[in-house]
Length: 213
Image (cartoon, rainbow, N blue to C red):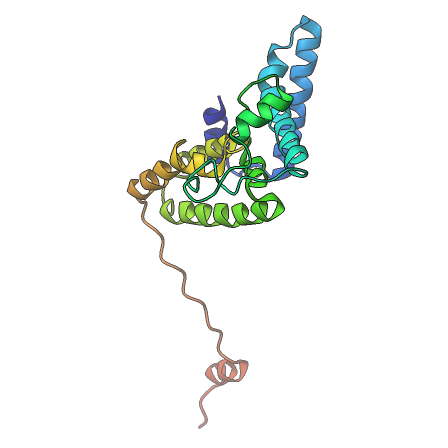
């Protein structure tokens, strides 16, 4: 459903504005809430509101609450485990799950994971890394079908609300997406238009005036 919606938006002419998308999102939230209220159910709101919007926000707030007052991991649970000692034998998702969610394994999204590893500095660091990855993604997707590349990038954005940046890059398809975009066929790019240089008025006036007798 998400892919179909993204493809439709990217094919639309003109493309919807950010304000229009915000209104559509708000309308969807109200619609599914009214639907569940009338039917005595929580299925629609659970799928479209709770899982997509509420859960990532609550999980991120718990990561922030805990790691604001406790040591961070410095990627000791990840690829720096050989050189850095973790502050707990439990990795962050298991630690947060045991403290706040009755023992569940609770993956944090991009910002939750960044804060769990390096605090506020980690959020700046991970934002810079993400910017570089998105720049590379944009470069390899140049002159490809935007409906394809844009919809895939949108899915990866949703994944990063529930998954760490490096996990998304290595295990959840972001790295392979960059490779796949680089292999997609390219459309012909129109040559850049040459700038029109206007001649000074004195020259134009001289060209229009009759030659001297």
